[in-house]
Length: 550
Image 1: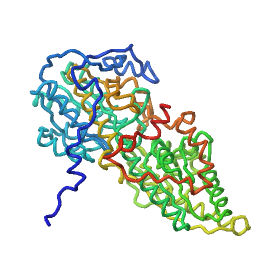
Image 2 (image 1 turned 90 degrees about the horizontal axis):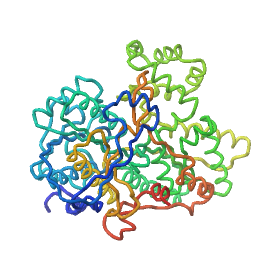
Image 3 (image 1 turned 180 degrees about the vertical axis):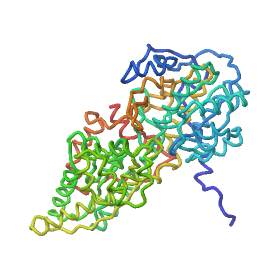
Image 4 (image 1 turned 120 degrees about the horizontal axis):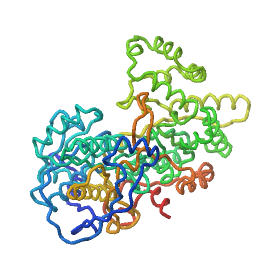
């Protein structure tokens, strides 16, 4: 037998033709809405983006045939991977070729640095066809370089002029699309003939609003994680002797944790936004977990599952204040970086913090305190994914249970297993939903470019309906922006979308979690992503979207 280079599923997926909205299946006409304004800090955002502020929301409708001039386009994959990125590129490629066969698509290699360092490749049909409906970002690679100074913008303009590139598509999350907006404004201010379009990517789900109903990759990643959670729950209900503490990706919001909770119905699901709203301490969180464990033990159930959002620590108010101070104190702090030992760094930090934050910092286990001062991410923030919150909670819960056992309140047995689901979901073969959604986003970007738009994010809405009824168009990126403190300075950024505690998904969860805490019969086993079969199984969007649209 010959060794395989592709699995049977890979071979089958290569022939899958993603579904498109009806408006993108033929000729397109653009319909403009009213002028827009930013979600907050309108005067500041307008002053920073005079050329791209206030543009209308655009929707596409079927129209008469047009002749479009040749457009060469460059594409960048920016930030962490998300399932469906290759289909965005496929959609851009097919859209450009449909609008004018002479159009060319170039991929900048390794993320935004490829634009600055002039590393690129032309994406031909032969190359694109190899990556259709596949996971990952390996067609051109990704990176986390920030586009934030004029020298970078000018280096980008140089390669665009050399290749006769008229537009750049940046596929990324909120920070990457903020960079896209800044780049679009710079090129408009300096009369460069370079358009910039963004595409909403992030498995975290925190790039969303009325016009961007979900970011791509969220659907696939949550289905991957929910399958694993369901498998663990089946094991827990079979062995009946372990509590599984499962940390899930999502630094800035708990969308993944909530969606996986809705899909699998575990015994405990912690939502960071609720912890913050209730002004809970770490001890309060531990007490809530302990109460469920004790209650289940009283009924002979010494097992269960707990979902923990990656960014929980940051949402505990006292911890949030501490982390904010650390972000400001340690940004570009050469004195701190020059210190050799962890103890020296710990003493240095304690001397600079406010009294309240210094007390919180002193009370933390040394391991967690150290993790809070490790290398920052490219945006100057704590790398929350390095903080093993699930292990911290296990340690604190075990100590609390031991105390309760000594007093006779707790009579059960506590054995725990910790998990972190992160990279497992970022490069999965995209679900039918994400394959269709990303292809539509890419095709939408191609139309926006051909219509000479800049500073827009591709938008595809009405996502709980069949794909033919989806509404494609564009949203001004400035519409999503506000001012936030980054690296100790106020900067314009796209506002992150948090879990809404008054929203339908959280309300449904809150109404049912007490029953899920008590019963193992409530466990749901989602199983693996299905690509072939009934549409109600294969094309199903997330529970979050369905509940939001009910």
